[in-house]
Length: 253
Ligand code: NDP
Image 1: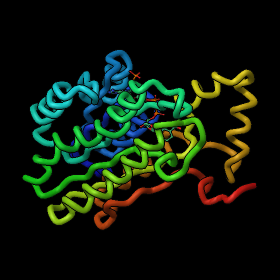
Image 2: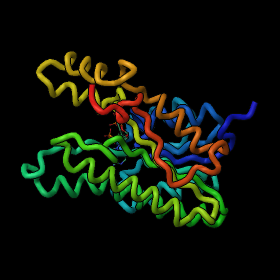
Image 3: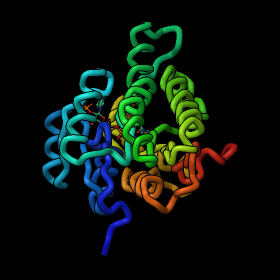
Image 4: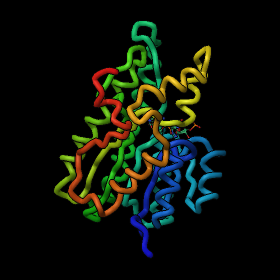
């Protein structure tokens, strides 16, 4: 039986672990041909080998790497149908205690890289009159947790980028959407808990503040990415789908 992404070519950034890895696995399972564009050669190559994807070493904050990744994908598969801008990292500070270089690092990775990747793949998508771009934003894209500056500034911007590009290219058959995961159990989350005196207590607290009594799983984000990348979402554009178990709809406990 044909998969939901049969023969689509998808380039996924930061797919060496976490949410990106789960998306790469789910895409391959649905019949896509996947390019793992990852800065970390060890994780990226391992995942690509495991799932039969093409690994391309790519730091998404380096323009030459972006161009090389898109060229490698084009050479191997002839096109890119789906771009998933997933690479990102928490950059959390109290605003007035933040070195200015941290602002630049956060904006380069969590916002500008998504535009730079889109800029590189959009000409091909326009030529074919089809394409889907999926930006992995965050609930930080519309909610604020104190002392996480400037990550939410970048993620608000990423949702703005999604809406803006979604409108710009809609008439050319290209859809641009975002996914806003809430708390998802990945290395980012585990590293965050590890920073507390009692990591297990912080993990339990994270579970308790979510209406379903747990946080999310990377595979649950991947399911939505499959949907948005597929032909099942032809009229969903410039939209952000929240995956947080209802947490952001809760006023307070
Ligand atoms: P992880 O840190 O587990 O994975 C991120 C991956 O991206 C790593 O493999 C990392 O490689 C790679 N990466 C980092 N910087 C670059 C770069 N410059 N170029 C290419 N690859 C890079 O993160 P998650 O899976 O948790 O997060 C993925 C996305 O989801 C991010 O955009 C994040 O902001 C977002 N998100 C995550 C949530 C969560 O709770 N986990 C919640 C909401 C949003 P390396 O090993 O070299 O660091």
